[in-house]
Image 1: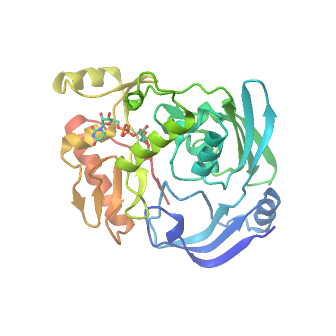
Image 2: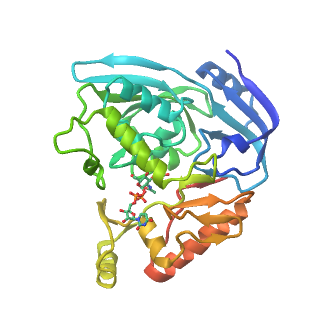
Image 3: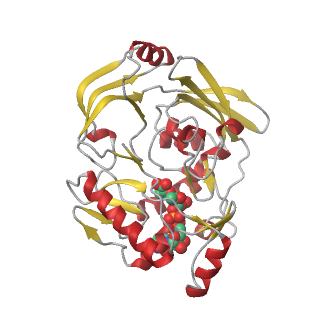
Length: 337
Ligand code: EPU
């Protein structure tokens, strides 16, 4: 066991936007006991920020005055196995895509559409990450946490987490109260593939035997084609959420824009923000040291040495343009620190 403790620590490697922020203190723990030990030693007014892979954060200040916590809890453990399913308990610090690669290699289905999403296992349960018609909530069984105030353990069942589109109880009523240490996922031993999103199925021949590995490879290919590699161009994936609008507004828009794409959603219609942004003419445009990514306008990129202000000014310009044209206010998916 070890606990890594650093002072005045550069967060450059811990935020995919590539902001040059520094944390007054940085602590990395590798077990539940270490996390509890750290929390006990902390004064109650210490500002704590738990991060995962830093792939959905924008540090808006060059200095974070408190402690940035990072989980190095690793490991995959089988907790239950049945005829049709297997349940795995995974450390929150494991890189998400390494988990996906592992289960795909074992032939266990459910996570393959979530291939190559950046970030770590802990964040998958808080953020309810999603792609290509699948969300983390579809496979999450339990979320193991530590209460930040009394250091006790609490296990949330899937239903306790109030999952919604990129949202959970951990982002709302229980925000900053629990630290996720492990997540268990239930996967299928006889996979049922989900190829309904977009034209994923078109990638395969009519009589082709489609394996989990082939789906994973295909998803990786589409993501690499459409999404910028943060090592080359700093970014945090989708910057905005896809807005869900009331039926009346959608009908009015459909009149003016007959080709507007849409997906059914809870209590309304989901419209791809990428489409809205493209209509405003912002796709591919630069402002300061930030740009709207040319291949996927939902993504804002750091064109080199950007500060948070560059990204925020660009985001505001996009929000303003979309609101002016469509009366829809885009909401950032990225979390401002
Ligand atoms: N579109 C355009 N112009 C573009 C790109 C897309 O009009 O340049 C429209 C098209 O109508 C297209 C639709 O947007 O059919 C959807 O595009 P895409 O399949 O690329 O997905 P998205 O809705 O833009 C969401 C997630 C992504 C996820 C993809 C695939 C959100 C905020 N984003 O994007 O998640 O990978 O679906 O499932 O829900 C992330 O969260 O970081 C992320 C990348």
